[in-house]
Image (cartoon, rainbow, N blue to C red; front, side, top):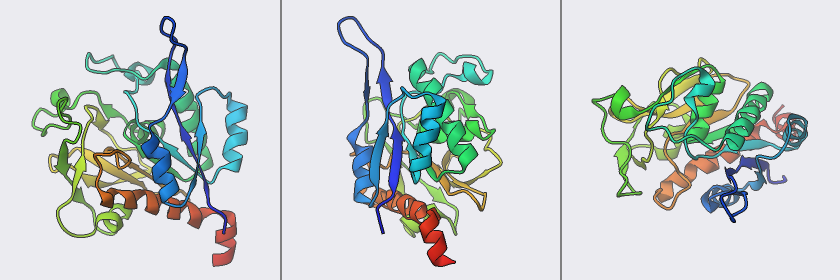
Length: 248
């Protein structure tokens, strides 16, 4: 059986003086997909809607990567002082990309802002700054410690339970925004003990989709976190037409 092709969006920086504009991607994303048995296909924020449509026809799944913050003004909310928006070019592209992924029910895994975007695209919304919106929450970001971690409370019978099993679970945490209202198509399958949503999974039987607020691709992640990518790639494989025919 051939390896699944997994698309992934990339970040973007505009021209600054003599430095040209460029796209980039942290290596942990594509290395994790490779280790899990997929073939990564990096997609720059430079394609029009028809090009994206053609590309998604050829992909088996998609990884929506992390980055800076979604601009709340694009969803009818005021800009919070703590929000550091994505470059406009990337956000426009990512929103168009997410819309097509959702419409197609393409298998998808969103990380960080990637998870937040999937939730927004499907009708949910976000807390713009956890310390203000949830003043009783624990710290979810430490500017002096990129390895800052907190524990996780997991719902049984879920993908994320298969990843971690029993025992104490701790994941990295580096965010200040979080999901507020969950889109109807998703179930919350893990939270921080303070109630902040950390993992969502599709509630729709015709769509394999999941998201983590934490970052299993970084050097600060644990070896066990790699199992999340394995579950994702296996989920992508199980939805491919040739696999469905074999099962039938």
